[in-house]
Image (tube, rainbow, N blue to C red; front, side, top):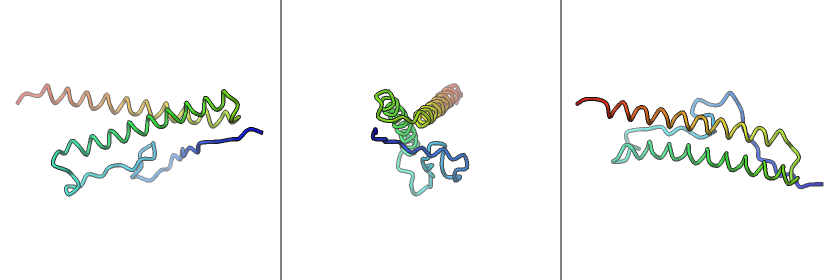
Length: 111
């Protein structure tokens, strides 16, 4: 029998309010937590989101490889990992597009 190594995915639609769809705790910005450069807190949150998206993509690829080589036989786990990774990537792209559009709007403002 094959050794089954499955990645557990938490796809609970009823998540606490302080969690985003990827299970990461939102960064609450308080005045005492904001460093000298306020952009660094925002950059940290964006970096965490990109890191989580990358990890989900890598996990999905590992499960695909394990399934293709016969190490696991649970196609549902592979499909769920792929779906979660695609949703994460789509969300990341949408946030990135919103940030870029906001930046463009700010640059168009006349002072």
